[in-house]
Length: 558
Image (cartoon, rainbow, N blue to C red; front, side, top):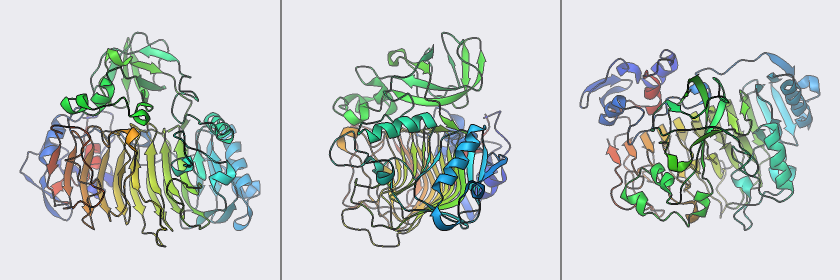
């Protein structure tokens, strides 16, 4: 397993009790003592240990999250205190200008921490982190509060949908704390105010502002290195984008779905929203360049084939090494908007970010809680969504990969849901891959796979009162691609809602979930024929070892 992986952490040992078998493969049918009693070692887990990078049903996600899932975030020197920039912490005046001045000043000096002492700060504007290596740190989510008085429609302007109609894109974009590189922020807001659609992804405003660094020869999913034609423009530590275009036969999309008769027979051409997400763009950092071989910090998520014009290209300069910690963002309490008409009382959103994080953050009375938009290798830890109810408590979209959401809570709403509103839950869409949701408590919501064929994502060690509904329109194509895994999920109200996925998702794994029953939103598989999916320990959450799939993978070594 991973030679560069650090030693098993205390969090891994105590939080999941999965490391007991880390020194050897435990065969199927053997019993392993874990916290809370004995559990049978999962046959699927034993299989995965033998082929961790190429298993047909379970994705390799051990390196999801900021700095490959590091237990601790960087601690930068304190460079500014918002009180010194004129912020008042008694809520008597708008503190947003002072906070933004402090963040910009620290960013322009190369980075550091901006301190937000205990208190309540009224903000009449959104808070922007547009420089790398800048952290906004409060005194703790129970001691520092930002009270937001306005929404993004008021502050930035109406953000219409590229698909027409009166839909508001603030229903799935933007935050009142918005971490986004300054150049991308400027282009986004300029386009929004001009009532034009801004491209939200990794390669520029028109999605053609990229430059080829190297062309890539064929490789297989799970490989850590690739062969390229020329390494002149590549170096160790560089953040690059692996770009795979589709061909006329949509064989790349078929590959993302696992291949075979079902995906080959599927009609892709009329799925215009889905095909707009291609090319597939995977940001990754280079760890070694030797002759014409390039090694990455994560294994390849897909095969590389000549027909997909594989290239290593430039990307928008992302935000890196920035974070927000130890605060509550509370929006002024207004009724939840009608579905897809959100005004933009949104919480914390990352956009075009890599190796960034949020820690100990609560958002309250928001339309949408935490957002990942074209974001990779970021961590949301100890986050909580509470208050009057949210459309998307968590959303993950526009080609977001390798992110980690752990120790998260969606609290039960404090007021009844108005008619015509919608509740999703933990959302993923838009070809997003290798993301992890771990150790969660969902007192409401659902597992919202919002079409757009996300693939190779993991939800593990979660308890959910499954009372939301998933979304996604027909033009976004399939609900799932290959290697989606739900592992140890307790459903408290017995409602299915895309938790049991062995009859829906191709090449998937559903392991140790509660017995569930269908309700009026009954889904059918998108692909015909055999799905090649696995169901194990159905009706018995917590009955198999390991309990937490992500943490068990972290305990493995290369």
